[in-house]
Image (cartoon, rainbow, N blue to C red; front, top):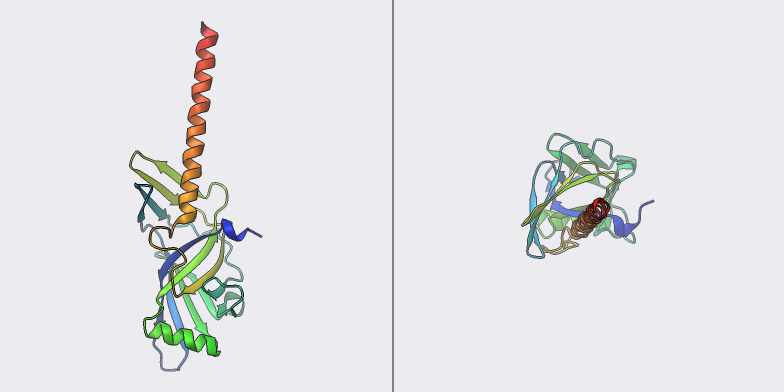
Length: 200
């Protein structure tokens, strides 16, 4: 099982769905394919794109719908009992939940209806090679090509990260990629020096 601090999270919109049966239905896209999200990190542009097909091999078995990613709060819905549906389509991943009748769910559903809560986050991990990087002078671009596992989707009242750090795990990955490239450059330079010295 992956470590919690290795998981990445993203913030998306969620809304209540009106119906005539008094069911507490909510839906929203957990992710959208080919939709660049750009943020500023250390005075550099950082752009992330989830590529179409990134979910093709993802493990989405037994995914819970949580509140604020909190393990101590009762699960609101779950794929295992079909109260939560994860629907992959051309646009991305659509989340549809039919909340069971509990006081917690009634309170949260009313907050969503009133617009007090309108954000959803999801937690995921990538396998080795699950992303591609392009490091430019003024901008770094990360393409997520393969999501390994979706751990949960979560309704959040306050985004887990503020607007400058929503992509905190991605920024850490960016720093690691830059360090890796620097190490490769140093290695190539060392090889070149050894080669030149050998030719003298």
